[in-house]
Image 1: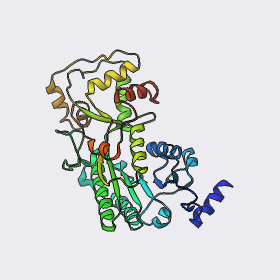
Image 2: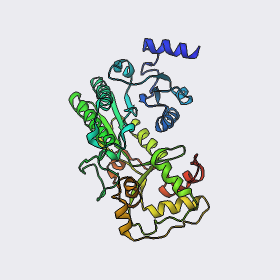
Image 3: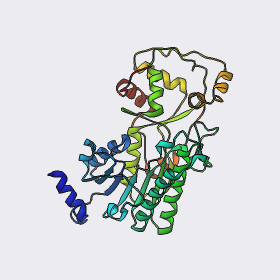
Image 4: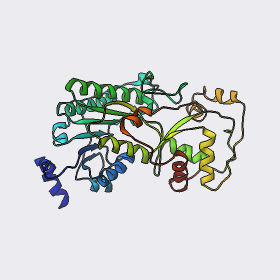
Length: 340
């Protein structure tokens, strides 16, 4: 019954549009609301009093937190005017680019282009209506697994994967639409995300850290930026709640630390000694050139640090917790898989 009522509200596109005299709540369209970040962001926005219309490819318990929800896959044919009706901002997570994280930029194909067109049309529809776009991109729009210098918004963008290239092209399409129609767009680039329930590369690193094995990491002298899911979500919340804030590209992270420090923090939080030993630096340089293990070696031994001073100055944002504290909390309660 509830779903039928919700469907009727959706078809009329009017139930979500109370007059401003009745409510001062910010009204936000959230795509990708059922994902790892989206579901947590939905809960955070609800707690902040933000009215939400959530779109997700799959049904799930998180969607119950939204004022309105729709289970759908965004395509170039989606009626974005209806989705955006009454919205003050759209937070776009559902670009669908993650499937191509490990492909080279030259591997561009029709399906990837189609998903890029979807984001471009959403951005254009939002800009025409004066709806602010908040797009969660990635630091991979700028680089690969490592970067020789500390990255800022002014650093040249040189993506090393199809995923990064698509993110960069989406950023540019969003910025162009906003400039053309005189609206605002905020693009967040962030490093690897950790937190309870995270998957992907960070889960693999945690499994390695959680294994009771000595690891040859002690001699690595690098700096790598990290961000907790909680901090990323608070960054989005701060931007949503400052509608007159500046647009453009912003980097964001909790901070940077060396790989040995990260593994030591995780292992101590698990009640274990660090168990790290050193190997000659040439071993890591050689490993970084190997076709299969190279990417992991670069993530472990290479530098990838960024400077997010622009976001902190413009929006007054600060991390949800100090990096060391957030890592320890994640280690103690955040791992759902099995160690190696």
